View 1: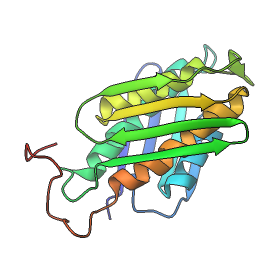
View 2: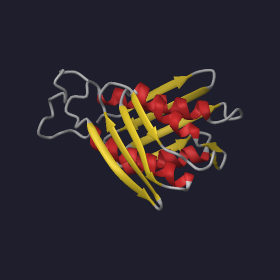
View 3: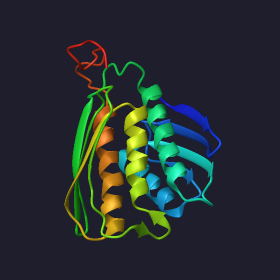
View 4: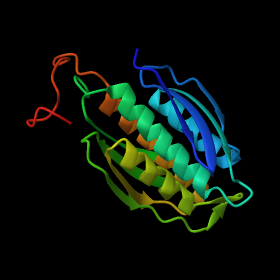
Length: 195
């Protein structure tokens, strides 16, 4: 089992997060933001990750710090759960249709941080959630994982559907990347010998 628990405490957020990449998609999420809860639940279920998140953040300001810091904490948990990344498949991609939205999601667990976020929502908010906070979440995740993430929007005109496709699709892409390659379970998937 690769389950880990990570805590992050700052003047802006207090976070406790448990992540298991070998789970079944069970989740218990309380971020203080209903829309972000929904997105993380979708990420957990579609990636088949077990995920528990509790966050007390400065949501009286907005959801920026909460989204960014949960992304950072989730990336740290992923990195810790994978250790030296021995045996993982490393790469994963998924094209996810969500009604009229179509998003390509791809990940390389390279040990290097890159975020290519070609996502364009037609509204500034979904409910009370600023859609730009989704990018901050994924940037925080990419930096602390560290990993290369690509999101390419191929269609979509509903902000909720677009962001939902991103979280579902990256969950499925990441599930493929963290899976153990049964043919090479003791090999680090890099000619460098390290990730």
